[in-house]
Amino acid sequence: MEPGRREALTDRRAELLALVQLRITPEVGDRTAARLLSDFPSARSALGCSPARYRRLTGRTRPTGWDAPGLRERAREILDRAEARGDSVLGRGIEGYPGELLNLADPPPVLFVRGNLDLLEGPAVTVVGTRRATGAGRRFASDLGRCLARAGVTVVSGMALGIDAAAHRGALEVQGPTLAVLATGLDRVHPRSHRQLQAEIARGGGLLVSEFPPDEGAARHHFPRRNRILAALAPVLVVVEAPARSGALITVDHALDLGRDIYAVPGPVEYEQSAGTNGLIRDGAWPLVHPRQLLEEWRDPRGGGGSAPRTADSEIPLEGREPSPTPAPLPNRILTLLGPSPLTTEEVVARAALPPSRVLQELTELELEGSVARDAEGWRRPRTSLEKGSGHSSGAAFGAGHERRRGFRLHPWLARHSRREHSVNGFRRRGGPGEAGR
Image (cartoon, rainbow, N blue to C red; front, side, top):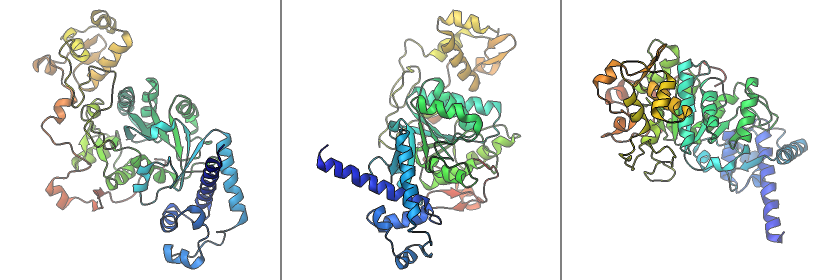
């Protein structure tokens, strides 16, 4: 190895070691670390901060254990353990650290990651929601995960029960990219029932991300901290289901501060799980009525252009590309096979002359958007759909003629009378989450 490269690697490791030490120092939170790292040229120099300068920068007394010898040894053990397992450690100010996190008021000094690092770049969508999801909510999240992953869009979520897990599993079902932000260290699992899911993400081309040391378990205050990273890692946030005081709305607050696009899935007004999402739509969030809508309206803020992710699903009309008139889009072809008389799944497959898995996938998507109905006798077209004609309605019409909204655009009356507090880039919800663990 050339001397210059060896020296650079030594400097990088020394800086990572200092960042880990700063991260594990008692009474030093991420905001304090951010102030120190902004004032000093490196983490190594920040560790030499005098008590007087520390007080001037943070307004607090420097912790008594600031320069304890055991801290450096503990930091070295953490770094060695991560490297021995093949994990990567990304440090603030070092190449590879996600630039989006620097827009946070309290970016984590270090990230521990396991899996495909390429997922930190390129198109991504964050999907969140309640742990106590309905069956319909889990199905929508899973369909959304599959749809995005097939198009090469990374599905970002938080590994929680309910909506998060459904979105991750949807992406994994099509061998697509998914990124999980953990509320524990990489060597711990929460909830324990997700041990297999966490392993599948790491092994299946996905990525696990944590700001906590590898052996650190879950704690109540970890979950809202995780949510800020969920908001930062993608330019689009989708809330599938959330009660009025769901912790998923903390992620919305962070996303608004970061200028992210906010989508919410509407649901029945009598369902507790829809109170938060319906409230977001009332206040100006973009309603998401079908998984493919995101692809049809896609604009990648990271690329600064209007191009959509590349997808192998030629029947999905993407922004900037006209669908081919022949052959007809698959949903149109399936719709022409259905009428008021029911057909079994086997009959639809035979008449469509397509693989059963593909037909079932499209039938499910058509059912979600209300274009077909299923009962004990089979699949049929609803009467209202037949009255509207045979054309397949897609999310492309939803966005036609409307300017693409970023974040919340509240009606002037709502802006005057809303019970929300103003923040830098949007509106912040009053009160805290009611769901521990989001």
